[in-house]
Amino acid sequence: MIASAKLGALKGIKPHEFALRFFFGGFCTVAAGIISKRFGPEIGGLFLAFPAIFPAGASLIEKHEKQHKQRIGRDGSDRGRMAASIDAAGASLGALGLAAFAVVVWQMLPRQSFWLSIGCASLAWITVSICGWLVRKSRVARALARFFRGDGRAPV
Amino acid sequence: MKELVVRFLIGGITVSTFAILGEVLRPKSFAGLFGAAPSIALATIGLTIAQHGKPYAAIEARSMIAGAIAFFCYAAAVSWILMRYKPRALTATIALFPIWFGTSFAVWAVLLR
Image (cartoon, rainbow over all chains, first blue to last red):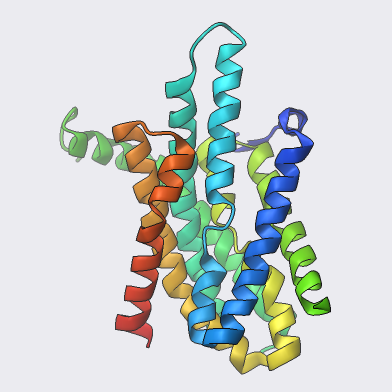
């Protein structure tokens, strides 16, 4: 299996960490609405793709990974940063899916129903995101990364 | 005021749901996809249509393309900086916000305006 779910990971999240995400999510949604009202939909639309909870999420990932390593007597700082970096790399691929979501909503919404537009847009988001992730995981992508880092031969 | 409270609650619930998905999924690179989920858009598009109509929401979606391109640049920069210079994650993610603002407004002004 290439991707899986680990429900046990939820036990490691403290209630205030859930509350932090809820607050940031709610705050950014309200802010996007206010900006749209004040400056119009063209500027307000930009903030629909604002990295709202990204800093909070990345720092919590770093903290959890660090704590996990400290429990077995290691420092864990590098490991924490690496986990946050890998999460950010995944988010960059998710952002391509986010762009696909926006294109589908922009094109479909004026002509189709709300639910059909949102359904197709969500499908476009998950498809583009997962395809991007699979391509990045592929052997060719890894060979290219090694080549550009200078520690491998050119991919064929 | 009531509208703001509704927005806050819907936004909080939607964003938290995607954050939980990101926590339980493995590997981390796959879970990261959910860090850029269309959570704010999903939370607000319905409310926007109810208040201003579909054409208004479509204009917002068009601008959202620029925001998403900016998110790609921002997240890629965060990933690279964390690997290369090893700052704390919170420091890097906040310090690099100007990349999102600069890219989103530049893409919007050049391609979508």
